[in-house]
Length: 212
Image: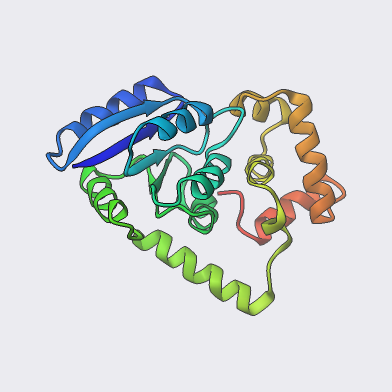
């Protein structure tokens, strides 16, 4: 029986996933956590085979939690399950140690297949994610690493939201952070990418297809 930990800051999502997973006879204990701290507390006290991890977790995003999980619990499989499309975070998630990246709109059959593969240490790649990984490898060979790959996970998330035309206030509300914190991330992004104004940011994002 596969033991699951669902990590999502929305109770209705956790309960919906629990209902779907409970219909599969191969899945045993199902646990829930609403943030990174609760996730670590659960894993340190409860045997788990697979973690279903959301990206948007408020103060500490799922990609940062993934880094900790990969370091502290290397044998636990992680499936990133997010509303964000594959072209935004899939490559970064897989490189960060996740064994699968699924959109929350995927079918239960795909979710079950990913869990079964990841539970035994395998890598589950949808066609979309496999193509993105192939393109990423080709890009690295052709032109080296682009500057945005040096951004932290949170900086990268803020970059994409800025590229979508979101204001600092809107991003702060979406990520449950203060406007001052987002402004700090914005300043770091401009510095690391060598940008001087929003127009250059939009141009950079369009060139690298980061707006989603």
